[in-house]
Length: 335
Ligand SMILES: [Zn+2]
Image (tube, rainbow, N blue to C red; front, top):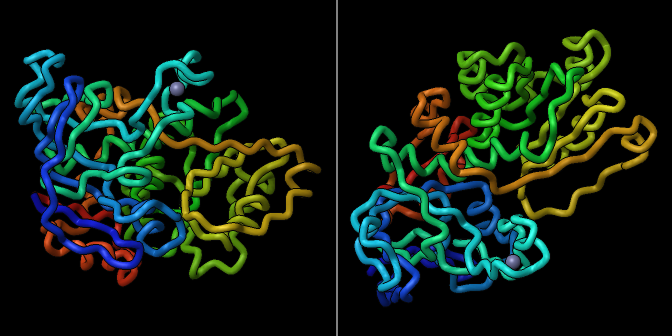
């Protein structure tokens, strides 16, 4: 089969052996894979991984083969899958149902081979069926949308939390805008792309700031928030320079939530956080069930987030597309 293999420097299409399945696994014919900021961070060398590695963890496909212990009803089902595999169901975290933090976990496309290939073998406990209403391309958003929902699983919204500032409108930031609006929050968006800012505003975000045209972002946020600051500030930007602004934009006893995985060490002065008793949160993989419901109900829109569709053979072009265009949101590889 063909696969896009990262050798530590380049992505190359290689002919490799079809994956084998165990009695508790399924073989999935991959239909669509989204390219994520984490994939880009690996590709740029910011996030070290074992190599050679097949990248790709936002994907959908069809089950074409099942292990002997798998219920035959799964055969031919349209599915997506969670990314944390090799779960031991026994460690400290698994005993407390925190499976995404299992100490033996390996993440698809990051620690072990992922989905940028014609086929992938998957442990059955990772699988989620895709409802008919959701296309294979739209289903590549289920994993990042689950991560957007996880923001509010990890961080409670209290009665005084009315205004959220979201730094960075990549795919995750734009999904988070929609989830925050569904939560009833007033949303401020900050990004360098007018196109993305306009999209967030179209969905209902009340305030937008183009960071390239605004010299004092915290002052602008103070202006919007009656000189208080945002109750919740989320960073999805992956821009180390934004961190100073993020702290200054947050109100005293507010909440900062870090979502970006750019893999870089960043300097951060913590004193302002301590003095003003700001709480730091973070979150990653989330509840697929909520994400699927959000898409199926039509409450979450993702069609506008698909910037380009490429073939597997155009993989390096797809990865490089993020460098060239500020308006780029998400590229999808379609099989
Ligand atoms: Zn475990």
